[in-house]
Amino acid sequence: MMMYEGFAVSEKGYQHILNHTVCQDSTQYLQDADCVVATVADGHGSKQYFRSDRGSRFAAEIACNKIREFLKSITFPFPDSKTKKSVVTQLIHSIITEWHIAVRNDLIKSPFTPNELERVPEKYQKTFQFFTEENYRAHTESEVSDLIQKEHSHVQKAYGTTLIAVGLCKSYAIGLHIGDGKCVALYEDGTMDEPIPWDENCHLNRCTSICDKNAASEFRCHIWDNQIPVAIFLGTDGIDDTFAEMLHSFYRNVALDFLHDNFRKRTEMLQANLANISKSGSHDDVSIAGILDVQKLSAIEQTLQQITKLETLTAQKKHLQDTIQELQFQLEKIQRLLSQSAETPETEEKIKRYLEKKRKIEEKLSEQQQKLAGVTRDIAAVQRGWEEKDDASGQVQAADTEEKTQDNAAICPTVSEDDRSQEITAQQDAQEAHIPACETETASAQPEEFSLDAAEPDSAESDNAGEVNDAVPEEIISESENEWEEE
Image (cartoon, rainbow, N blue to C red):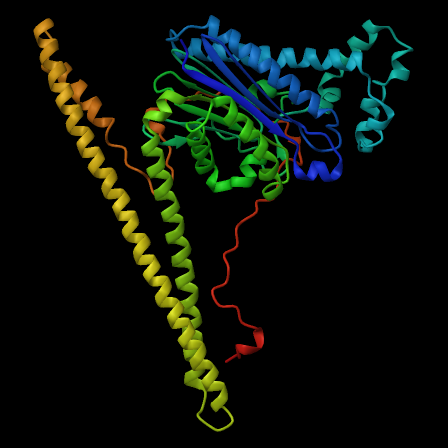
């Protein structure tokens, strides 16, 4: 029985609310006794992609169904890398083909309206103009279908979207990705990574799309056939742009939150929080889907909390160091001003102000240095506690290994010393992970990725990328400009 559960949440972006436009993100998840699948899709925002909300919905639903079929029909281990690449390529082609069929059927059923086309840039008008209700009446359904098929590479841009999809069964997991957004995996040792290779063609407001001519070659893939994560999160770029370098921290906290409530209740709470995330962050549509094993997450809860605490302390340390550096710069500047000021009756009042300013800066500097010393001690304590836990865990593992080795020797005395040595080494290797000051990839634990022979991308334009709201630290001492005199 699968212990993993899935969820999918999505919310219209704050900017879309202000502009009275639809949410162009879609999410989906499926789970049964054998597998769990989750998807997110982000419809492009430029005016020529005026039905991208439908396109993203088609992509999310179709990918879920196709990956579930794949997991139920393709068994692990794969015979060889060539077979692995072949079956994955077939899966990608099946998703793209079904998406094109869904778009064609939607266009036959619902031709473009004048209201939709009036917002389309002029260079796309000619392509889209035929697919209106007025023109449909002059042709048979078969003729319309044939023309859609002929012009599919152009007309289907109206439905353009990105797609991230992950499916997991008992023996392996697979992830597929085209366009932007991120897939983040969390492992049993507490480390996190983004295993699906990033597409360098996704930059600023351009990204690859399922509507591209070369979409099949633009998909990236990752297969976990060795160490399956305890949690996998998928997010559209509205989430990425909001959290930026803190993305892993955000998903780690989401994982911890799922341990403290009923799974479905926690999903509802996450859904309710998405509007605030968009408003305070990217202003874009925001969507998250995930697959989690709550039981395995519970076993590493303390580890995740320690990583979170260390990460928080490290951020505090960096902020204090920056503050101290700024205070030292201010102190040096005022000392230069003092040294250059002659002691005359006219400058006596000015010197008094400088000295008072210097006193305040020195007090603040001393205070910040004391805080930095305290945070540094806290970091050392967390790291020391982690190392002690590692040592204790290693001793228990060694004792268990010795006991199991003796039992195995009694049952099967032909086991070689080399075999025992390899088993002990493998268990010791599993204990060598330490909490990183910032997240590092677990590339060594991951299976090889393989390319799908990507061709030159037909990148889609998108306005999905939001502005990252970098936090600006408060000034320690705010002064009017005229109190600082130039040298």
